[in-house]
Image (cartoon, rainbow, N blue to C red; front, side):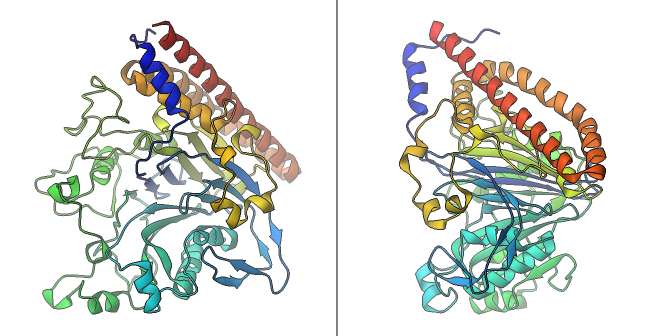
Length: 513
């Protein structure tokens, strides 16, 4: 593999990228696959976590914790609520100093993550004044409380709804994604106490960008598939956002979403570019932008989907469409070239993950998250089984878990922990991404050649690994968990070492030229 010549100045610019934050906005993206739409009967939940600025990711194991009567949970803005007697164990993705960047994977196989979805709702101060936000409201802690207390995704939606009713939401709007081995839900929230949740159909796929997507198809009377705050429709009528006399059904996305930005893709075509593109990838058929009025909440896939299929969506950049400004990477990296149509995989991605949630085995074995750090197109998936009881040491900054869980520490994180560390996994994979971006067309081929083989071997081994784990589980549960922990740690560490080798190889090639 020959990498095209780069100037010394270009290489030095890359070195600076490791140290200087790039302040651009993030665009999270989610793929939800119902259990009848996946090849192995799993609920699949793919998510790109994206935030601007200099960031790091810590992966932490949080054990079950017991509390005394009278203990309380303190929220970011000072509100409190009673603590439960015992919280569930979970794997925690910590995004320090980011208000809405953490995700959780609890011992029952319940996953909680989110996409920012702004709404037309009034400001925080206005909602406080009229009582729609009380005791400072709830924001950062909502996902954690759901993960600590819910045994199922449906229960998680109900817990979230109760907390929203009690405190009101602080952010303009957000879609919480709550999934388990049987079903997945999109919970759309507006600032304050109004929300709606819709279940992903078992035989379909939901593609969620940074706008609300629950529309008129969501029948609030259908309590098996839809939940909502009690006065949702009445509130929209009161605000003048919805007029039933016009003969249209209530639509959360139509009546609560912000208007598109002037000159944006959504203003021109009426749809979000990433949802449109991802639905095309899943369906295998493009929707004509000149004739489309709105996109459906979910679509039927062209074939039953796998973890690899979900990862392919998370790694995409509008390839094969007229909006690919790179012209098949001829003009540069899809991460760095400007376009009105945002990409699913981007330079602000901290993690791309695919949760494979299966109900036919104990959750410790049947539930696994395939994680990749930084932009998933230049990174690699490795399996992190729910049965893990420790994390690979170069994938987190050390610290006692009680201290790391403290909300004040999260928002006042030690500055030195953000400094570049050539042995820290998050920095290694970001360095690899930055190097690939210097000559994307050629470097991505070299990187993917290595990673595709690495991933293929893991997927080939998966059934054998799980058979061993199941046999051990029947004899000694702890032995099975120790085995899964060791396997997961070994794959993560092997991937990290290979990433460091690729970084050194690319640096050497660029430096020579």
